[in-house]
Image (cartoon, rainbow, N blue to C red):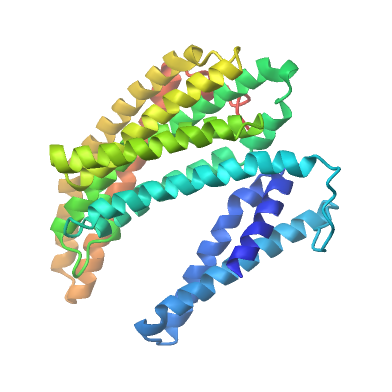
Length: 402
């Protein structure tokens, strides 16, 4: 049922976004996560065996999708929108469905090619001991927060770009695209600046226990850093793709995705078999391909919209990079400097704690505190540097996208 629910959720998602309601579409994926966590907690409370864990996960995912659809449908009903759950003959005289297919089909092909890139990486990783699992863990830790930022940023963009798709509105569309790209780059750099210095402690806090030893943590942290280097380009590519879709052009991103797929295959082979970088080479290849894809998208979009002038925001991007460097240095310094003091506190508390489990909990809580403290200080410094460097979107909150 999740396949059918996904289509219904997508229709409601687009309808609410087009109506200017971005909160529910942005938060609706959290319903699935909450549902899955609740189901797993219920299964653990009932004392279930690991044998049926997959079944419980499937039930949680289905319940989460159903909750998403119900919540979105209720909100649509409050707005006076009816949900068209009835069979109707296709009106061939209506050209709207043709316009939708001309964008939707290339977009589906482009998304499918992105999944093929993952399969290519897993093929090469299958020849390396532990590489496939390490890639999965690193992708989860590095791309999960990136996905949250991406959803929050991209939900309002497509309707906003679509309203400016007429040629007489392209001047304003160019302004919106430049602002959106700057926000995307800023968010990606902020995420990389905070998590790259904290990659190893983050992996240790989240994953390291029992069979997941320090060697595995170091391996996953290395791959996580490689993923995060490409975070700004990942968000930037998604913003540019929304601009193409808003203009009704789905073929250009598809051709670029095809070129990216072929380039990724070639670079995977080169970095793994020739350079010998191993699993990090797979991620480096993907990052390089994303950078090239962003460049091609900018060039093609600039030819389509002559007033785009993406070069006008390059100084802003450079200042964002400078802020990210300072924030990363601050994050690393705070974590290292606070580590010795917090470790002394943990040892003093552990000295009076008799159960071994309590000692482990104390050390884990101290690690969490160190990571949160360093990330908080790094974020504050990043925002402060952007204010000092006069990034307009930070100084004036009214110049935001949503």
